Image 1 (cartoon, rainbow, N blue to C red):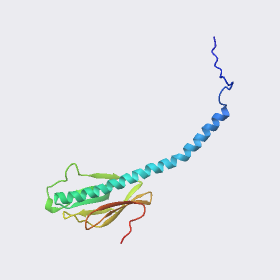
Image 2: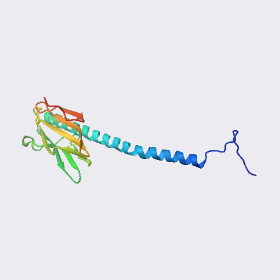
Image 3: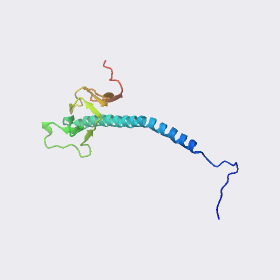
Image 4: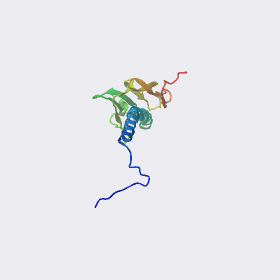
Length: 165
């Protein structure tokens, strides 16, 4: 016994050419979308890193004031990545340690890069070195993080560098 299914309109389905055209069209759309999706993911990673770095700077300021010790925010080179850390760096506070919940270290992985490499010291009186940190993504400056020296306030801006008065 054979089972036959017939449509009421008499059409049997799609032809091979129609299916091939749909497959080619979908393939072209997917291939053109992949670079845009990749750039979007890289952009989100850059933004996340910039905001994490800014938060670490704010944490250094709060720790310096609350602990009464100078805190260094340091950027150095590690194994194939930049290392960013908070360090207690004050001889008057020998024997103290950063609170475990705030002791922070993070890696900045390529293609992201942080300029300049060095240290920013936050003092217990709420001041720090004035500086602008640039987070680049494949040679394009994406975020500028500015630290005001007199207040140690941290601002993050996307795109062009902040204007100087």
